Image (cartoon, rainbow, N blue to C red; front, side, top):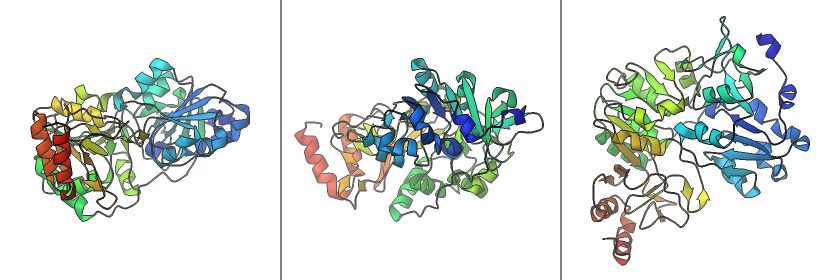
Length: 426
């Protein structure tokens, strides 16, 4: 059955027709082999929608302005390539939160083709979706056609990852290297932020934390904690460091006790090797992992996220710079809300106080015109910069303004006070 389904890239591309909706898997499971050749069918197709998020690579089908009208990259989380190509008219943003990403999209239109990736088949006919289960099972169950790139470099994982060969229509075999993240060098300011965030995290907390410099700074300051657990969207390198340091055991978790739980992962080969046949790590659907109602059942749930801009009342923008779209909602809002239902739960929004060599403040009197409110001020709890911790939950606007000015860069504090007075925010 497996051999009958193996096809060339060209044969797989022949399945794509004008007007269809293609949805792809994410991050380390990005279907590079298919996407890198998608532009070759330009002359015979029009209005093909390609929906995915967090693309690690830049592809001809949307980077080339000549593709306009033939392909539209519908992204629900921008990365560098999408930001660059947006002015070409080949990319559009789809506002979605992760746990409802597929159900919301399918309310509009069902996927015609699912392009994904999998680890090799075992003797019982099962492959795994490896390190990405955000919406892949939903796609396999609803798409008219499924095409998987099978790659021996993808780890075989546990959880809701199994796919039987009978569920797949076509297979492309590849041995390409899977994406890895470069080593990060932390600045002194990022280390300060990590230390402040660590002050808020108690022993036996369950963590949601992403990837990047500030999450790495945070995990680096948690090595002396005891019995931490993981229930996160993105499993990143810093969590593995904590496990190896003995601080992360998952023993005190309320849900999936003794298990790491995530719905995708991105890191180095060391991280992917850790996942290989590791029954202590489970990847589950984003509709479960990122559901605020599920998140809130974890005791001492701590969500650590970031922001691009925050106004003095606590409105948080994490996805645009003014009206220019930059990233996406992802799981930010879901985990912030989920912690509010968690006994002992906390959400922490951590970011640098300034940008461009201290010439732009990330804490502002009002969000820029067109800026997206990712998380409402009602939901914001703790805010951390390199200048300390602000506590907003339950506070009045007057109290919030004072808290946020105290953690703003000193060069902007007088300006923030005068603007608050001028706008009668006090």
